[in-house]
Image 1 (cartoon, rainbow, N blue to C red):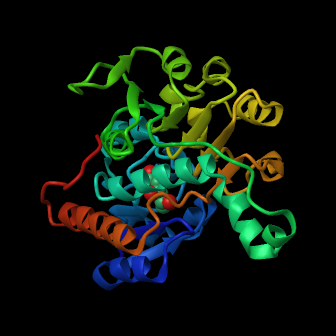
Image 2 (tube, rainbow, N blue to C red):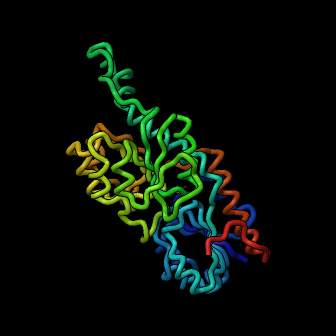
Length: 313
Ligand code: 8YV
């Protein structure tokens, strides 16, 4: 009997095959497709394998009377209404840790690409502009500068460890001070931003971190400041960020996450002081495979009545 629903449009063929080869499953690309599944199949669904960032709330849960687990493909589960799930006795799982390295690597890559003007440099080498106009205008030393990590969770710590190897002075803000000898704790993000050159956002998403990096924090970063965001577009006041990038109130940004993905604000495309990535922080073959395995194994554990591997609620 069909007991697993693959929900989301973004599953790759391999990710889909891993699930469909083990489980008797049905698919819905969009939220509105759930209602199109016939009622008796819907009633048999015990697990949702979820991929993507569309809101998954009470309206979908209430169409699946037998649902017991939502297994998210990703560490961030801000798209899922966990309160609504818990109220219905539905478990939620995610895919923590397996993606920490890749997301931290991309944060460092964007920080270096922005400060060393690598996107503009690539175009100069590629288009013949180098022969016409000569060397790239001098850019900005990254090693030995100061960085502020907003949110020193598992990914934030991986970023800080990497940047410490770049001889950077490490500052951070988080809910509480951590055991981090030599690193400087700030209890608020404005104080953090005013102390550093680079501000790297590694917060969780969701309502509680919305616009945590505020217009005031962006202003405090100042004209040499660079924002790097690998968390969620919601964690920064994006309108204030765009204004600051356009006016030169800050120096630049490296961004993997945005509001309204994938239809990002066209103002970003007009800027030459930003490095933009299409939310690909965890997007390596190795890590996406590990995420797919973890999602699969959480569902298998649930259906077998065993403990979940990485429960959220
Ligand atoms: C996405 C992510 O899950 O793990 C997260 O929180 O944002 C990503 O890894 C991935 O892009 C699939 O949607």
